[in-house]
Length: 203
Image 1 (cartoon, one colour):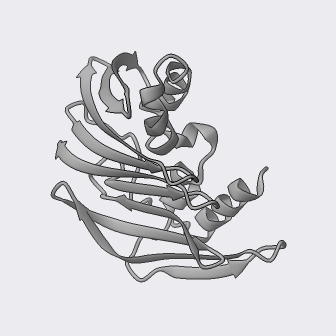
Image 2 (image 1 turned 30 degrees about the vertical axis):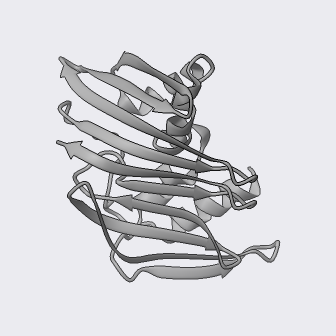
Image 3 (image 1 turned 30 degrees about the horizontal axis):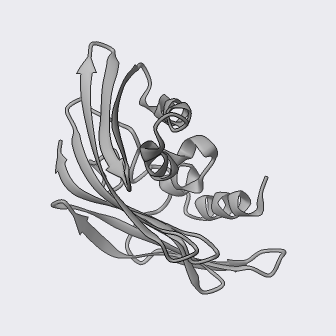
């Protein structure tokens, strides 16, 4: 297990609660999402994108349609699945042929790669005011908090902030009844980041 994965798993265990505040991918089969995405790399180059995701129910299956653009790349992709939690794996293979999908796979569907955002941390205590701090065996100090509520696309949720040695590493906003995040920001150690914002949502 890498240090970062261990770190996020530990944060998740510290926030654990009996009843999850939010469950990812709990689609009804009628949802429409539109996101904007900004990527800043280590050299300071900024790339933007826009993504639309439409979910429809077909009996016991879910039809999921993606379309969007990132930088000079654009495209669309539609798939059907029995289990929405399998979407990350499907998208991983699609990114080889559709590079515009890569930022979406690395954020909204990152649980497939073991990213903490879709593991234990989302099962935790999301009450505003929750916070904690610890230092690991390598001397890295981690701080996590639910400092306030957050609102995007007319939906209000809870705001998670995680810092490492005082530097922002992760932000997340989720709303109880919305099956995908309202906002997500992943910050690299070199200062680059991916920032995803929900700008349109229909349940």
